[in-house]
Length: 168
Ligand SMILES: [Zn+2]
Image (tube, rainbow, N blue to C red; front, side):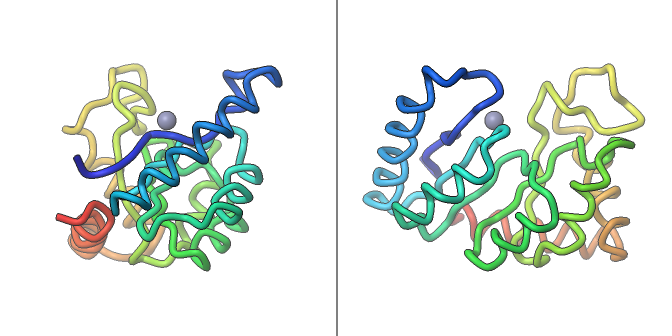
C-alpha cells in the first residue's frame, strides 16, 4: 500500500447534508496517513478552500498529492508553499482549461505529477474515447509545451516526483 485515498471533499456531488461526514472522514484519513507514513491522495472537487483549510488545521502528511488537480495559479502557489504535489490529468489539454495550464506554469517542476483519471478526462484530440494509460504521453506532451521544456525533461521530472511522492 502506497497511499491513503483518494479522500477529501466533493462539494459537487454531495449536498450540504454530507459536508460534515466528508470532513470527519477526511480528517481521519489525514491522521491515518501520518500515523503510517503514507502519502495522502486528495480528491478536491469544488472544495479548494475547505480542503486547504482542513489540511492546514490537521497538519498535512509529509507527502500530499492533489489528484486530478483542478485549482488555478493562485492555489498552485499555495500548494507550492506547502510542498503539495499537483497531479494533472488529460483535462489540462482542454481548450477551456487555460486556468489549469496557468497553474501548471507556476507549479514548481519538482511537485508536478501526471495521471489519467481513467476512464475520464481523455486528453485532446481523443476526447470521446475512454481514457487509459496509453494516452499519458499525449498529456505529458501538452504539459511539456506549457512548461516550455522538452518531453524527456518533463517525463524525467514526473518519474522522479512520482517516486518521491509514493516512496518507491
Ligand atoms: Zn477523484
